[in-house]
Length: 219
Image (cartoon, rainbow, N blue to C red):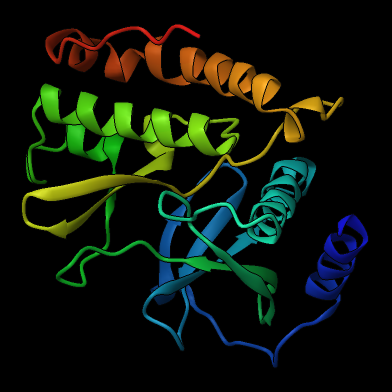
């Protein structure tokens, strides 16, 4: 089964589509490592292209873990699925789900909902509920998010009053020794440590967690 997974990885990185033409009008966002473009052929997909080559390791790790989780039938209800590599006029890109709301609008990050008054306002209690749901889901299915920060969590509305958090970046086990990939106990420990660092100690979430009566997670 593991050899089959390795074959999947080799196939993904060696199979490229015809060259896709992109320009600046397709840009959705830009971070410290990669630029995200709207896929010109699919409204529900995006193309991520790394431009900071000194920090490409996290990008490769995320792709490998999304293939790994798909291979072992992990649920993708809170993840942005990977759809393979593509060739573009800006270089090689990775195709992912583009998270949209029920009305077709782009889902915004949790950090945006906290600081931008023009976005739908989530109460602290609602945010805490969404975070609790995501944490429980990660623990239950041993899905490791190495950077579950508010700017990596998209708030997706399936209805006007119904939302969930989707992790769009920062998936995978960053540790050299990969025991957590095959042990539910160690996976839970890794998930918990990253949650403490990026959620419970987050400056942008501090006031929200306090007002929403967030209960610190205990393993």
